[in-house]
Image (cartoon, rainbow, N blue to C red; front, side, top):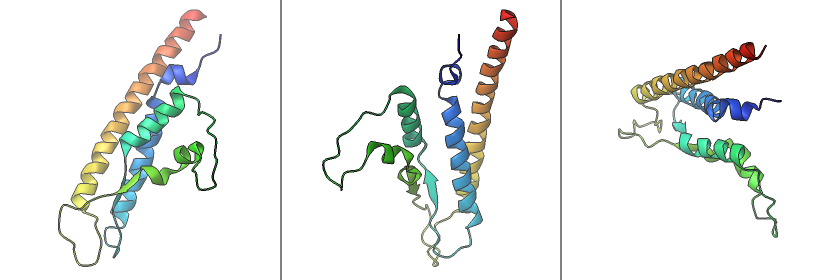
Amino acid sequence: MGISFDKAFGVFQYTMGIRNQRAEVLAGNLANADTPGFKARDLDFDIAFKNAAHVQMEEPSDMVVTNEKHMKHSAIEEDPELTMKYRMPYQADTGNGNTVEVSTERMKYLNNNLEYQATLQFLNGRIAKLKSALRAAM
């Protein structure tokens, strides 16, 4: 009897990857806080999560492409740029075109880190249950 990681870990394995990507984006925003013209971006977690859940639950259908301008379904899921959005700043333009608000970025980075840690604890709980089940089976 095989163990499927998708069934054992559910969506948590995908959530960890999304949280990790979001941390990189937010860290990039903080690193460019003084770069003129830099626009703050953020990863849309809901869209990324729905994409990951869709990939997990359904096999991609074979869509017929009748025109070269049609996008392939697989290209949408693989393109991380589609889940990235520019953030609307709360304050007026600083004059150099930079939209990074350091306090907002720090708060979002901290929140993302807390959610990452919570997801990690869920995964650790599932791994502990699997280890317990394997020991009981021996």
